[in-house]
Image (cartoon, rainbow, N blue to C red; front, side):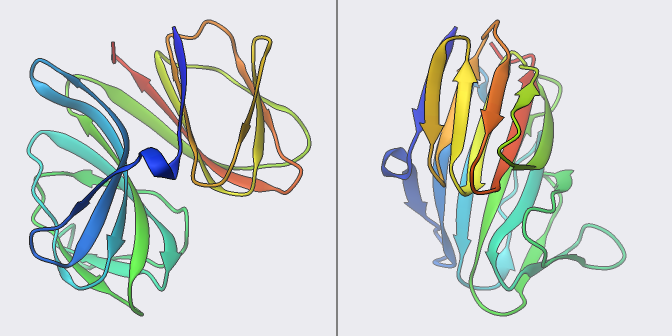
Length: 192
C-alpha cells in the first residue's frame, strides 16, 4: 500500500527529437518487460507525426489551447477541440497531428495491452463529498481547482496539476472541492 503525490516540480521533462514539442512524464510503472502504464502531459508546438508505441493503448485529451486534429484514426480526422474529452486509440496507429489554432497542452494515458486495463473518467468535483472505489492502482490528476481528499484517516489537499497515486489501498477515496475542481480519475487493474 502506498500513497504518493506528484507535483509539477517532480515531472520528468523531455524535448522531442523533431523539435515539435515537450513531454512531461507525471508518473509511470514498469515491469521486466518495460512500460506497464504512464501518465504524461505534452506541450505540442507544431504539426507532426505521433511517435509509434507498439502494443500500447492510448487515451489522449486536450487540456488547453485551440485544439488539434488527428489524421489516420479513421476515414475522417478526429478533432479534439473541447478540453477534457477523452479519445482512445492504439499506439501503433500511424497518426499525424495538425494544430487548429496554435500550441496546445494535452493529457496522455498509455497502458500496455494485455498486461493492464485502465478506466478513465473526468469529473467536476463540488463541495458535496464523492466517494470513489479504488483499483489496484488509482490515479487522480487535478486539471483545475483544488481538491480535498480523504483516504482512511489521512487528509490530503491537491493543487491544480498535482497527481495523487494510490497503490493497493484498501480504503475508499473521498474527494470534495470548494471551487468546482476538474479531475481525471484513472483506475488501472492488473498493475502490481
